[in-house]
Amino acid sequence: MFIHIIRLLYYLFGISIFCFALAFIFFWSGLITVLVFEEFSFNIIIGILLTAAGIIFAKRRHNKIKQGVINNPFDLSNIKFQKQQPKESDEFDKPKSVEELFDSFLKRKFYSKYYFGLTPSEKTSDIYSTKLGGVPYMPKDAEYPCGRDGKPLRLLAQLNFDEFPHLQYYPNGILQFFCKDDFKFGMNTKNLAEQENFRIVYYDTIADRENLLSENEMPAIEEQPFGTFPIIKETALTSSEVRTDTLKLGDYRFEKLLLEFAKLYKFCPKKTKSMIDLPETLKDTIYNSFSQKCTAVGGYPSFKKDPRETNSELRSYDEVLLRLDSTDLNGCINGLSSCCFLISMEDLRNRDFSKVVYYWEK
Image (cartoon, rainbow, N blue to C red):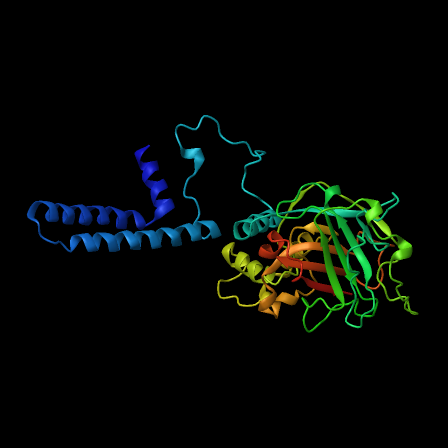
């Protein structure tokens, strides 16, 4: 039992144990010298320095354990007080497939995020509904959002969070996404967070119908001759239950992590510097398992090419306000494969929707 305790301490703290032990000896010997002989002792300073060194080594050790660089040395089957050997089908067995190994690796690097999916519904939508397109919820005292040219924007999507399961940090009330009806759908490629031709509008409280603008009171929106707007028809959306999500293919961090994973589990030599040199079977397996896309609120974003990869200023925008994807909105949207609205955690908590990254892909 004593040996197992020593092994556990070494696994958790490494050489920090020796630093702390020596610090204890030097500090107390110096303190005794001061108290008994009334003379200053440098042993106290040495003890403090050793304590600081032990803390630094302990933090480094903890990070390596978290990253999976240092493996747990314990083999539970050898511990005498274990009553029952685990069965092969035990749910706590080590993951056996490459997908499970990589999923565990990602979860050590990045915490799982919660999200819920959105799917088209056959129910009739109204001004309060979560929906694509249509007539927006608009209080009489509100200013209708307009683009840079002063013309009113069109409602892309509306989320009524009172209809959804609770999602931590996300607001109550109604959140709306407006964009310009043009070939860019209001996206500014030079500044993805500039809300000139798209707008995010938030209402923390929901007013009664008599305090809202009717459809006839809404500003007239000019229809484009070529039908450029991506929403084909007004469609109600319904939410799924809350689920957990991990980092996805297309994220600017994904390929770097896959390369690190491949080296750690010896799928490639440690000197490998490029994704090109990884085994094709490994890449195909991981890409097929981590490329899931869906229309959702929350979770991690998914892109064909992440705009944050070449623009580090956008990397704080990591929370998904809304993601629309054509794979599960077939017949509802046209002209884009997916679009994503991202916000920083700080702005999400503060309910500040003035700084949101809007990016779509064909």
